[in-house]
Length: 139
Image 1 (cartoon, rainbow, N blue to C red):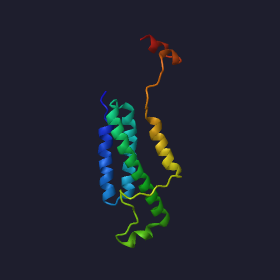
Image 2: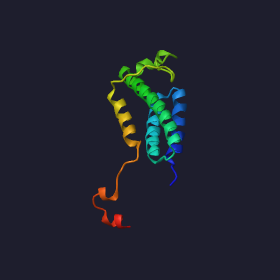
Image 3: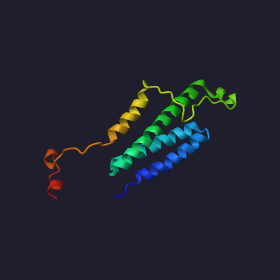
Image 4: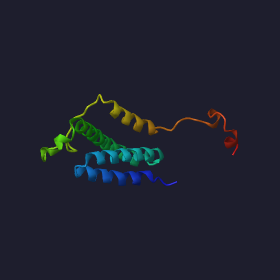
């Protein structure tokens, strides 16, 4: 079975980057989340360790950006639509700017979901360890 999740994720993240660069932050956030889910599934089925490592590095960057966008969109929703008439200064950090908020529960949830879905080592499980499924074991 060919791993179609990674190419799909790359396509979605490209759309997210385009929306991000155009200032459509809420749309970009949704696309980043979709892409992260696809990357997570794709990493489960990726067999090449070097490619998996490269993808993980990229995914971490996309996750950071999604967290920044989520914080920004949440702040904009709190302030209301009156701040949109402020001109060219949006208050949104660009991709290279650094400022992390480590105490955020949703950020930890995203990271936990991603790390929980990735198998980093081969589990030592035998057929005898699996309960039931006798017909499957016989074939």
